[in-house]
Amino acid sequence: MAQKITIEPVTRIEGHARVTIHVNDAGQVERAYFHVDQFRGFEKFCEGRMFFEMPVITPRICGICPVSHHLASAKACDMLVGVEPPRPAALLRELMHMGQYIQSHSMHFFHLAGPDLVFGFDADPAIRNVVGIIEANPELALKAVKLRKYGQEIIRIVGGRRIHPRFAVPGGVNKALTKQERDELLAPIDEMIGYMQEGLALAKQWLEANQELVQRFANFKSGYMGLVNPETGDLELYDGMVRVIDREGKLLAQFDGRHYLDYIAEHVEDWSYLKFPYYKKLGWPGGVYRVAPLGRLNVSDGISTPLANEEFKKFKALAEGPVEPSLYMHYARLIEDIYAAERARELLEDPDITSTDIITESNIITGEGVGVIEAPRGTLFHHYQTDENGQLTKVNLIVATGNNNWAMSHSVDMVAKDFVDPKNLTEGMLNRVEAAIRAYDPCLSCSTHAIGQMPLIIEVRGPDGELINYVKRD
Image 1 (cartoon, rainbow, N blue to C red):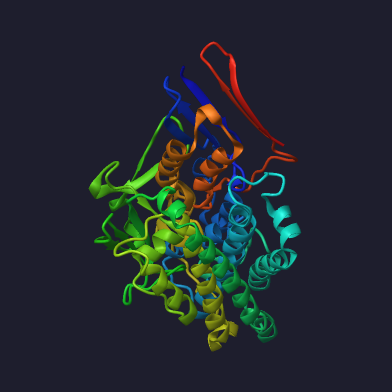
Image 2 (image 1 turned 45 degrees about the vertical axis):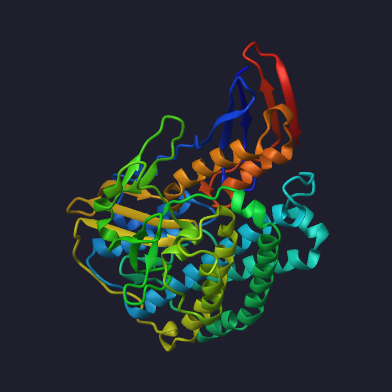
């Protein structure tokens, strides 16, 4: 008797999605789909705007990572006016970016993924959430809040506001950093790194204690993509070359992001509004890849800061080739968190960080600009084309989460087939399916939310409409 199980909404992610699990006549999961049904239309409604408006408009794509869109947009605008920002401006942009990483990665691990690790996938949903974390371990919860607050303070102090910044402009930035502000941001860094290390220890302890699950849970081969330093191959988050490796870890390509259309294409399926990017030269689906922390660490040869690099070496020792299990995304994310804090310190200690040489003027319009950056959730591309007056004629965005669309969909399918028993359905089984998505920390149109409670009801019905099974989560 064919059935369909629907999970809607998927919880503890940014944005809205649903999962449908299709059950065959034998009562087994035949296929599961990850549906992203939202449509924003940013690319289309930006046409006709002036290019210099984009660093202000595009942060509204996302309320969690507006800095990433802001900076990718500003980098595209730099190319549109044919200039490079002065070094102090580039340092300030990168510093703001590190604040974005600290607040985003810390929030995801402690608030969104953490409840599964602390309480277990089968725990009562009434406690398996951030409130449960606060009640079970208030000291840890407070540290998590302080971490996110610190990341937000970097963004506020550098850019003037915590969300939807107006800081980066074509050719540089519009605000210098004072020495007093620099010292204020430097003071808590050691304390913040200590909190991150506690989170890292918690994640590693859980991963080591649950190796059977880790190796079974959405563990699959794929390609990987991320930015690297062109000279050292080290992890890069603000600038660098795009590197793509294959399923065995061999280099497929390393290219300047402005040429991304020579390497990346997008596939469309009729069950999702979110496109499926892939490496063009291998075709679909042979060229599918993963991005975000797991992707970035798998393509990198090292990390330029000491504490993060020591942990990176341990991460790389987990496998002879790429580290594949999706649950290791949490480990990689915390390594990047530590790197962001260490890198923020390096930037703040650079003498140029308080320089007032923060903008390069330009009187030309080149007609085309591409900005590439590593958002917390993966490689982000902004591509603008304009007429001779600077009015946008075409906008193309490949958003970080979109690069992981295939990986999330494949993970959902694998976990549903492996862990969901439709004949004995439990909420914990379905939470595992959600956790497969959560590992990638997707940002599905985060600037829009539902208001109030988001209850979940799962009904399994036969073809005649008869109710077979029922699970409710308030």
